[in-house]
Image (cartoon, rainbow, N blue to C red):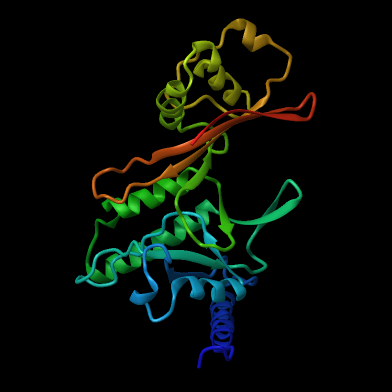
Length: 280
């Protein structure tokens, strides 16, 4: 019965049912988010599925779903099968899904706190049913929480739905990722620049990041700002450090790998931007 609109009818009825459940519990606007799992086209071939996953993605996208930009892992649903890493997590774009303006474009996103809460509830529900109490220690769970904690807004992606990496802005999270900042500067950038004067000192980056209104220096960072810098009246440029992170799929390494990065600054006095360092 494919091609007759049945999928859209079923999803619309499910959305109505979920909205009814939400309103009965006092949520007049309906569900905060409606998620959907689907096979990854990168990890599941067309021969391994009843339908080409890429074709299924096009159907779901047409019905209003977008990909949640993080490495999703489904919790074990029985004691006989492990957690599933071959799925993607999507969300239906409704009136409750926020968006923000980037340049001239409006882009949808979902708050990371909401995704974290859903993942926690889903894993807790499955684990309680299976009698497993220590799901929060499972590496798949901790990796997801680590990814989600690094961004306040999780982008929602259009097709194609592939997930080679996730992009984080170290400025966005109040500069608490000191380890990633140091690793990017020392291990990724430094080998790419033969002369020391080509690379801005990391102390300068720390000062620019901590100059954010209401911001603070990275955790455990040594305060190297002297009196001259504290009393300087000229505004510092807004520094952003974008990192492309890849999370290993083995069972031991919890830390992400930096696949590439870009440092850029915004100068408010001239309304100009500068891209300084790009490494991939």
